[in-house]
Image 1: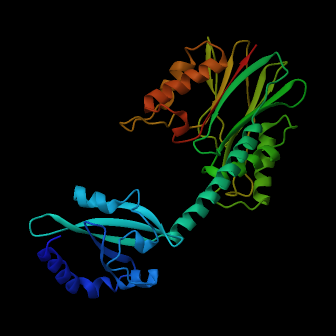
Image 2: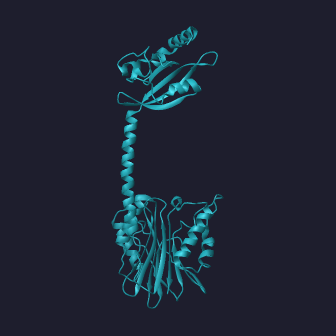
Image 3: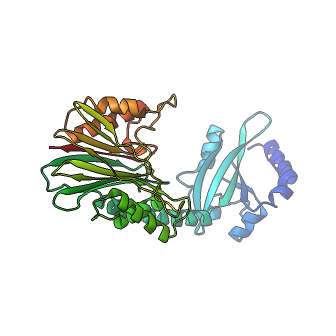
Length: 372
């Protein structure tokens, strides 16, 4: 370094010394040969000495230059560089920037060292807690999935379902079960919200719904009363469509608690929407009214139940997948129930430009039953 350059740096020191000595961050200036030209007050106090005149690495207890020396990179490349450094057991974020003379030559570097030890500690603690939370969520997801319907020991009906929550825990739910030797119960539900609160309501639903009565309307009214006695938040509610199928007579008795998409009975020669009014399971009214209505299935007929997640998927033009596209597949696909449902899901994902079903915007739940 020339004498003029050194003099220029000394004059700069005089100009900025009062400013940088007031900084809490450590500041030091190094020449091109790794010599410390200046440290501010905070760094001198932090090191317990003023290392001016020492090599930069010896000032922090090293015997040779750091392997990832960013000051040398700054000198040779003339651009800022950043790294982390451990000094006396403390973690520092180090930013090195070039100092140039009037000829635009790099004559020195200024390093600003910020103590991030506490920040890194808190980040590590947060990562540990997040990891523990993810483990808990994965366990909760397994428990929630374990509550989904299993295969039935029944040859008069077959079914398949798709259950895709948009988060680790879903707010949709469905169940299919034998009430007695000749009656099958099936319901599909959509809980307000997503995540843990919604999943807790699905657990409440499964544990509270009356699986012995043959009247869906009675089951929903009892569920409504149980919901109210549990003092849930007014913003929480559950929409439920519940049907009971008599496997001997093939009669379907059904009722609805605010489920906003109508289940469908269809076959090669029939199409019927199962519409019936009813308020969601909530604490909005003291005495809601639920009504049982009936229909009849024939061999080969199918019953399709779903939540609105599939039809509300949108493409880049903000156009929904909609019921028409769903019905086009549903009424033309005569493969096994599992194949039909997969066809619908694949079609909706292609429409919305989704390659990975783990990134769906809303819970998707569908169930398809077929009379043998």
